[in-house]
Amino acid sequence: MKILVTGATGFVGSRLVVELEKLNHAVVATSRRAGPVESSLINMGEISASTDWSYVLDGCETVVHTAGRAHILNDKAEDKLSEFLRVNRDATLKLAHDASEAGVKHFIFISSIGVNGNYTKGVPFTELSEPKPASEYAISKYEAELALSEQFANSAMKITIIRPALICGENAPGNIHRLLKLVSSGIPLPFKGVKNKRAMASLDNVVSFIIACILNQKSKDELFLLADSNSPSIEEIIHAFADGMNKPARIFGLHSSFLKTVFQAVGRKNLYEQLYGSLEVDASKSSELLSWQQPVTILDTMKQTAACFRKEIK
Image (tube, rainbow, N blue to C red; front, side, top):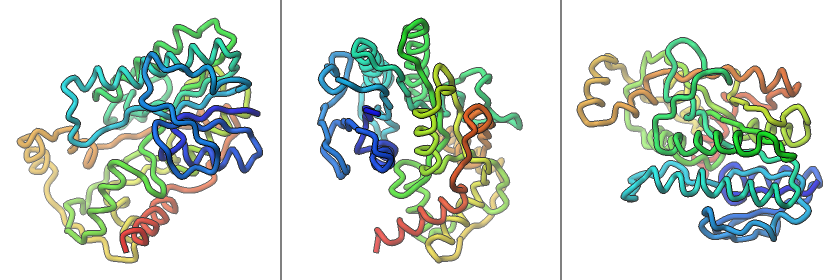
């Protein structure tokens, strides 16, 4: 099968390209920059509503769209939402329209669990949960989902939307990378006794599930929430990372109400929710509808991710 993978130098896209080529699929890999991908890479530059995708879509049956504007630390954009919408909604729709015109049969959009919200209160998110995106990033992903579902409802090109939880794996960016740096530093962290539940998704499992969606007709015109079956607490995450680095986990306890007050005082309420609140996901649809099973556990993934991080910083 000929498959276009966007964001092919990114965290998910680069791994997906490798695994698809192992299965002897013909992969067209695109990115906004050059990178270490085992295939011919087409540099598309900064994507937008004016990007011409026609020449890379010739003969493709499936598109997996992993490219997008992600969370940016210290984002300097004057209008952050407009920037996110420009890439994550408008560029996505242009790609989808070009794909439809080119005769693509299946468009797989990698969204985010942030579309559902930032936290849960004892009831896990499911595909039927009301979306409550809070960040500019999540809003842009949700608007892209809505537009894809509306504009291609009666199209020959079928849409699949995947909302993964926080993805953990070798070279993970964002919050995973920041936590690894904190654990590696040996700084004592105030997470002892925190029994929250944080849904995560192993990179191995995310890539495996995307491939399952490519191959299984039942995935078409479906929405999937994706997370590993176990949702570790922040304390368990720190212990797993420390184990992977072969060093002790240095943690201590502080009362949650005190910490919440401190985070609110410095304008970081969302960070408090990410660290001390829960975000649970019921991802049973992914296995039940597609008869798919997770190849690895999140505990093993966290330890392996930390081990790789330790080797890189030596």
